[in-house]
Length: 121
Length: 121
Length: 121
Image (cartoon, rainbow over the protein chains, first blue to last red):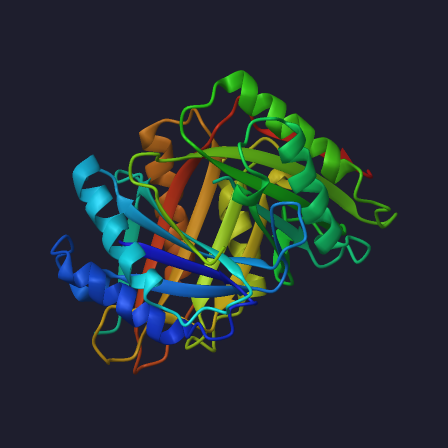
């Protein structure tokens, strides 16, 4: 906890997923909501097969999903999504001909049934 | 919003993910539930590593997950899952020797903490 | 139902995802919670782009997400996550130089709107 998923469409060639994850993780650490930086587990997936809407214009998206152990207040969740959105807005330059939607979603992980172990130091 | 994820197993070679997404998006537009076709963001993932059950027969699956901003009624959700299931039932032909499970799941996105921005026109 | 997602980072080369899925499915069958072994649909995704925390040590993770039709008790969910965690703990050997986090998350699928069909025998 927390788990972050970054998804982005393949028509955004300038998006550097690796550094995007680092910046997203830094924003999470800066939020002060998480005890240990080690706990932040993030991954990125590039989608080659996608479709935005039904008309033919060139479109893409970047979607961040942040999963948190349940219990945080709506205000904290809003602050977290706003700070992550600020990071992804800054991931450009964006292709001039692509309409890009940026989204951040926060969801709860059921705290009671979450299980965890650590291997190694 | 909405976000659609299509997952399918690699033993369904006739499934054309690209046109499947277009048909699923068309079904969502036709539902009348979404203000703008542009809002529908769909992606497909083919799974090369999968396992259905524990016995050795050839099996596969197609799974659609539709994530909606919270607030829709159970009836609307049922209608949406039924119409998406109708689309994926029609994605064949299916391999004769594979038992294929088709599933549609609807889930809520927390509306309050959802954040969004649009780049470009 | 149920749906299992196994994610793991690419710096765990000894992890055999195929046999991991079989062992996870066997654990689910052994739990006695699922009527038919056929219902268990599992997939594995290896992440090439990931970031754990913000410091530079070599780190990785294995994350199992089990999605169940809503209605099971917290106790059952805890038992399921504990038994899945036991399986992934046993997936080593682990690279000596990587700190690996293992996590299991249980989440509900909305039962009312879940739709399903079966193609073939």
